[in-house]
Image (tube, rainbow, N blue to C red; front, side, top):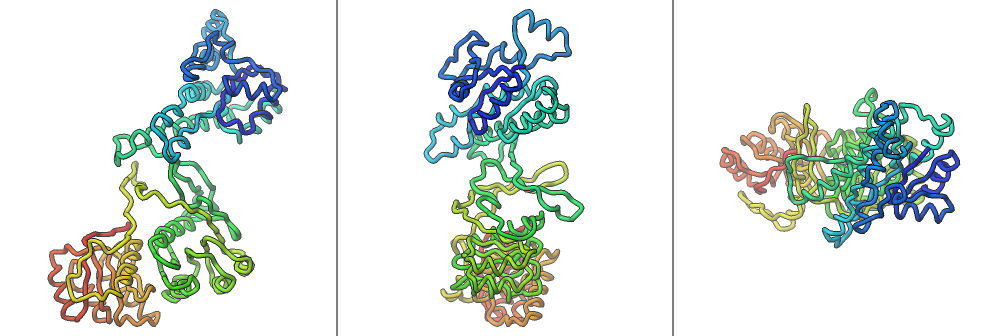
Amino acid sequence: MRALISVYDKTGLEPFARGLAELGFELVASGGTAAALVNDGLTVTPVETVTGFPEVLGGRVKTLHPRIHAGILVRHDVPEDVAQLHEHAIRPFDLVCVNLYPFEAAAELPGAEDQDALEMIDIGGPAMLRAAAKNHPHVLPVCRPQDYELVLRELREGGGAVPDEVRRQLAGIAFSRTAAYESSIARWFQRGEPFPETFVPAFRRVHELSYGENPHQRAAYYEERGARTHLLSFVEQLGGKPLSFNNLNDLSAARLLVRELGGPACVIVKHANPCGVGVAESVEEAYALALAADPVSAYGGVVVLNRPISGELGEAIAQQFVEVLFAPGYTEPALEALQRKAGTRILGHSERRAPDDVERDYRRVLGGLLVQEGDPVVTSREGMEVVCGEVPEERWDEVLFAWRVAKHVTSNAIVLARGGQTLGIGAGQMSRVDAARIAVEKARELGHSLDGAVLASDAFFPFADGPQLALDAGVALLVQPGGSKRDDEVMEAVTAAGAAMVFTHRRHFRH
């Protein structure tokens, strides 16, 4: 038996190669791999001995040779193939172990030059791996160190024979690896091109989830390859049950909102919509505001905070039913209190990198994918226009707070807020007036006064009826994109009520 080994990542290589040698494999290796194996005390046949041709072009060409690829691609059950190998004195390979140059890591290095990235585009490695995967009934394709133990176990148990299902599994892994590799290179060449003709994202499985949107659905979480950060990067689960699809969907919604809020902040999300948001001088106050905004809806919610959790706050949160708690740190007393609630999934994170501002947004549709640019973070009041009344300088923070929250509420969206706290939220309604009615009614049911409150609408009001509901309830400041044919009617209603209104001239639909 014969194994061809050519790896950049040499993790676990020595015990794997030694295991193959003990099983009777001849080890054939290229360049640096051969040197590493010889240094480990193993007997190795260099690739150039097989090809009769030295490595050239600085190592760019070493395995692209008929004596290599014919040895990989030969079909042992096709007499013509076997005869041709005998005719040309070519020996077959039974296993090919290849991992690829780390193109993504090289291309993402700060200050990396194009030439540095180009030199990390592997040519021979993918060619050998694809050849072995294509011919998997006769050749074992191995491309991940985590598969070394599986391969050795199967070879030992089968006396050199490996079941077809394992061969197919390894072939699938190999083609997935080369496909992801090529997609990362394509994305690098297409950088700056928002919507290339052929769009080839690639994703890597991070977790199998406890269940999907419903308990009868299986689910998994994947990170996008090449993304600077992802939902669970540098996240550690410190307690609680396994994560589900809905947990992560809600967590994403909450994290996207909290990153737009300045100062200590808390976001509580249910069914991908914020039900309570608070911003204050301390994270303890922020949590209290978010919970008081709508304590009924907060039951069983996902709670995200942007400051570490103290023992006092941990005790307070432990009094509530929380599905997922996410924060950048916990004191020991906080963890002790929270871990008493076995059902709460406690997540701590240490990610310090900023997300990619140009990250695309994907939506799965029947037989296809909708792709759009991400909706950028609202950083200031630039572009906003006061069209009715006056907005005191000290109230602009409230305007921006309500507007940022509305951006993260399912359309049609109405958010009522005051002093860094949401008071009532109308989400996902087919009519904007119904969203306004629900927001006002929720606030009243929860005992929140709307006198002087801010209303934010993610899109313009087509009629004055929605704003009038809020004005009658005491709202004194409205923020909305504007642009309706009936803007004048809305402005008249606002002026008549002695209130003020801001046009953002930018819509924030979220579906």
